[in-house]
Image (cartoon, rainbow, N blue to C red; front, top):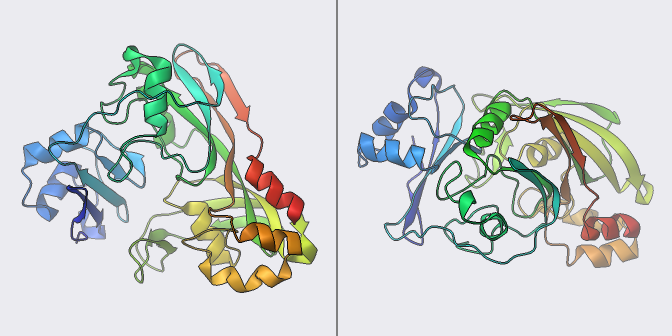
Length: 328
């Protein structure tokens, strides 16, 4: 059953979970059954307009076949929902060619306009940088976007500049042929120092705003981690995470499940405030104003969907994470 549609600035957001009995069902038929107030043609239009994600990946084909445990989020925009506008916002571009670009997104920047964040987003900046030819690539509302990272996560993202490249990148993400690694600063240190975390991820039964490792249902999720450095006599550590799957908040959820939530995580790390006393005095002072999860999208690698060249990129940790590590 869906969440009751949440109203945000006249837009409605619906969250649904696919049951075992609904596997292999067409996406549009599934939505008609759960959202009878919306016609099938309206739902199909919303899908093709990139208003729907499955496990945080944009899906734009109404005949998509569903799998059990998938997390569907449908945004029904208000009638007056405007198209994003170009804004002169600086971008940290790591690589660019005629087909795509790699951008190093700062923490605090939302990827695309949405209710509550109508401008100042990565998409607004990309429209200014790329010009009119960029409009509508892969969709009007979220041009060029094929994947997202959380607002308060920094690091690398790939953006498509042509429809051909957009389609190719969507396919690479769908088949998990994108190599990505993240650096995270977590409380304490994992034992063993390297390993694999397996645990299906679904909506938390206690808090619908959170994801959790669930005993039944959910979606298969696998994270490979490796400890890089231990700080403050074991009070915190720097780890590398590589995703075998890409689920909502996967690293944050899996590390919390392992007993090592990310420093600064406002959603999953609140239970760790008592550990502050174990940090250095400098780190304690820094953490009082550290308002985001200590997570950075460090590396990104894939075969270029147009040129077929093997591409690999890496970015330095953001200044706030570097300062946190120094203080630890």
